[in-house]
Length: 379
Image (cartoon, rainbow, N blue to C red; front, top):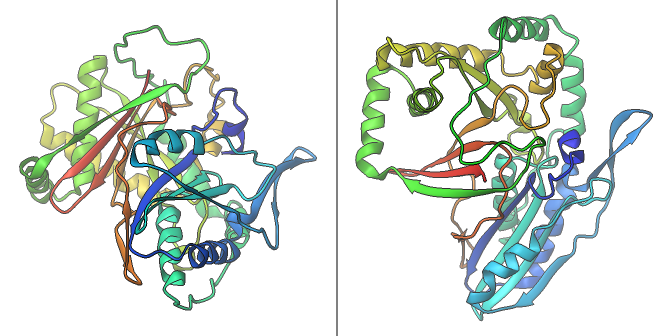
């Protein structure tokens, strides 16, 4: 994350902004105190990053006074307010998060938040929002058993074990030989240096397709994710006319109970390599995808960036290393919360920030009876 942040043109590509609408009689001072307490609980939110003697180090502040901006606005101004709110972070200066409370009506507010990805992941956003609600309501939260730096220290020790060497061996074998570059047809020539300009497209499966996916998964003994990943591989294969496809997928990285409720960046990226060869049936290909996915999960602790270094890949400044498309299935960490006679729910914004980290990234959020697709793509 630190290295990616230094790349020219990344701007806000690794920001994690969001908006929640809060309905009810909100006490803004009490809300701000709840935010401050969340900041006090989680070191990641009080951490900055710098290079000291060629090493990236974390600098943790004991206390950061958190400032929540406050303003009044009209409904039609929301898009403009959100666009101006999301701006680049300086990783040398903590906190690497910001917030704003916008009063729309007497009992209707918008809560805007933004955190840099180096300090947080998708699960962390859910934790932050849940804890704000709990603290506002007056609940006493249990002390966290460990800190993020304890996790970092454990991870560094783990890198010296035989277990990690076995995982490294698995990944090096998985990517032995020539590594494919998926080339789907594009409207414009790929720029010599990667641009982060992007847009997005939204769609929903609806209940019928959702149920159909579930039936296929049940019959094949797989998860819905595996069915969708197999279908995505076939899609890319049809467009590229290639039969060796690598797709990136994130993994939560929270395999220990002590880090379940901790804010921080735990996510690792798995490079899923599958071969949707034309003469296979979809059922047979799905079995292969399942097997490859299970093996990847067993070896998920090996960091993706270490893998890229080990391969000594020639760096192409117009592409990401190893893959250019991501496939992300999430269970909706940001959900509606009811607390102290308030309702806080995600605000569905139609506008985008105009960024894309990859050629294409399929973000899928599972609901009760459908999947919502947000397809982010490089323009």
